[in-house]
Length: 239
Image 1 (cartoon, rainbow, N blue to C red):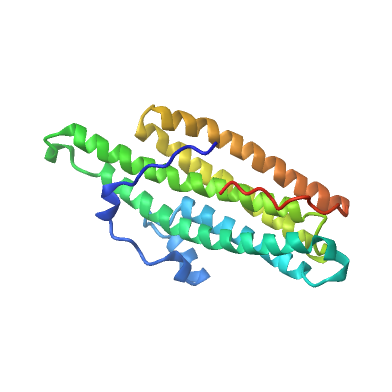
Image 2: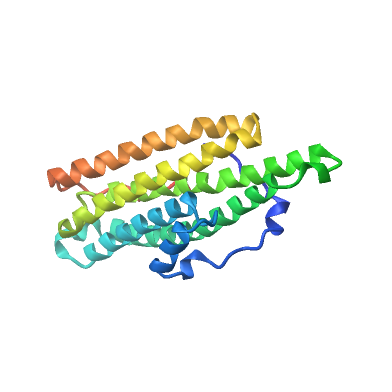
């Protein structure tokens, strides 16, 4: 069961949001990523990598539509195309959210201790900002799981000429999940030990294990060239 989210953090409103990463060219994004600026960083890169994986899944579904050879999987192709397209857009949004959350957390950590008469107030700000900075990449890991669910469902049920693209989608999704997970775990000590951090520590490895299994299944089916029976129901996305 997904862990509950925080209602928000006031300090994020203090940090000015940067222009959306989705509006940058690839060259501009790569240049910003390589700069000495703290954002964008690994969290945003992970989310964008996952968005590319989701887009590949959408492409495979689209290339499978309207082909008599795969007509028995038409419902799956339509559902996967819609879901993967939505996931790609959401993951691009998460890239922006991650950059803003990290900037807010960095801002909180730099608050001068000597200017805070109430040190508990400063600690609360840091913990609140860190929780958001952990929650955003956690959502990325969860969305990566959904990308892998779709890729696995399409394996053996979609255009064989695009099967290698499913393998690339699986590779991108798994790598992105591992990257986002690192950003979740690194922020937990700043929050402190509580029910939420304990639940998150337990959830992350389970998600990664599930994702690894799905990715392995994609590679296995594609490598074997197996054609699979239609699904009885649409893929189960944890949304």
